Image (cartoon, rainbow over all chains, first blue to last red; front, side, top):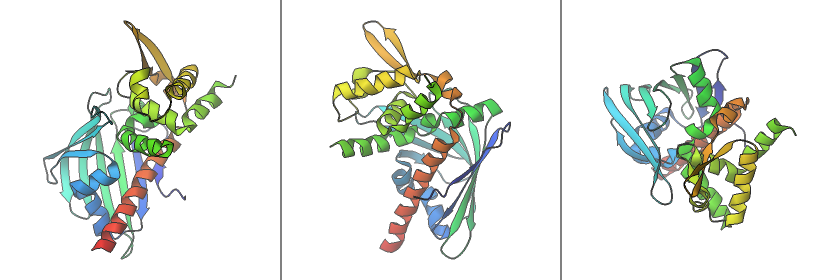
Length: 155
Length: 107
């Protein structure tokens, strides 16, 4: 399958740009970020809290098959402009990574296509590189999903 | 032995990637890791052996138990990690797109 997601991580910088064009109207793309039950489906994580407003908080959690918590992350929402922008912080709990700042910008391309830009700023160049080189740490909330897929294939 | 190539071979296998994800936040015993997979225990042991040989996992003795933990230092040496990172986001966004297309047609 064609990989549509682009990552721009210039050397020696402490930020990162993720861009992706969607075959979806802008409103549906934004809804996928705003509605907790939809976030749960595509992120493969439980949404414990998602307060879509200025100074609101969010918290996601993923469990393994035994019900143990494998991933928990939280942050604060600084800006929530429907169909346009979400500014928030992101911090993994029980992990040696500092909080990061995320700017999510939603753009209408055509009636049925849209674009998402995620600009993430890390505390340092080293921390950004560490996060990039440890996709397993970032992808840990996918672990349960992937595991389930693998288990299903083995059955 | 070309260790670098071996590291990439090690992470090319989905079960081994799943194991690395499991131990990314906490060290686990072989038994605890195996309990997450519906596959024979010796198969999981083989995967653990490969990951340990490639130095992606460390073994730590704790009493009678051996715990497996991720070797962050070795992971740092793997230069081209942007691709798995991108693939992770691409998979996630593909899923988002599929879910919202269904959502649209249900409306």
